[in-house]
Amino acid sequence: MKIKKDDMVVVISGNYKGKTGKVLKVFPKKERVIVEGVNLRKRHTKPNQQNPQGGIIEKEAPIHVSNVMILDPKTNEPTRIGKKIIIDEKTGKKRSARISKLSGEMLP
Image (cartoon, rainbow, N blue to C red; front, side, top):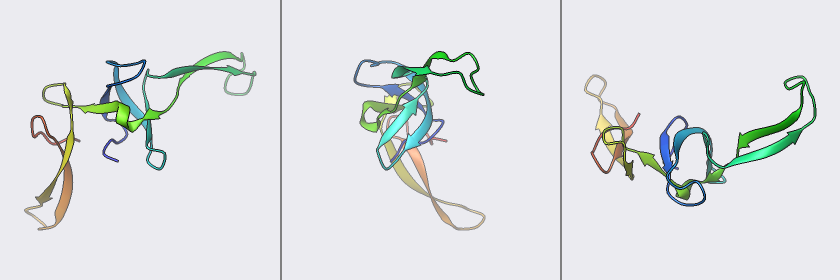
C-alpha cells in the first residue's frame, strides 16, 4: 500500500468527495484508511472511565484506499505515487523513496 500514516490525502469519490485530511490509521490487510474528519459515524456510548458523561460520540470510520489520493507537497493537488531508488553517498546503500508523479518531489 502506497499511503502511510500522517500523509495528507484528498477523497476522490463517495459522500465526502473533495474533502482533505490527514491519515490517522492504515489497515494494509483490509486496504482501508482512517482520514481525519472524513466518514464520520455516531456511536452511542454508556458512561465509562474515559467518558463519564456517556452519550453520542462522533468518530471516523475507515474508507477504502482507492477512494483517496495523496496530495502533492509542492502544488497541493492530488497525485499518483511512484518509487525511486536512491543511493546514499556516504554508505553506498540503496533505499527506496516515494515520489510524486506530478512534480517529482519526494514525499516524507
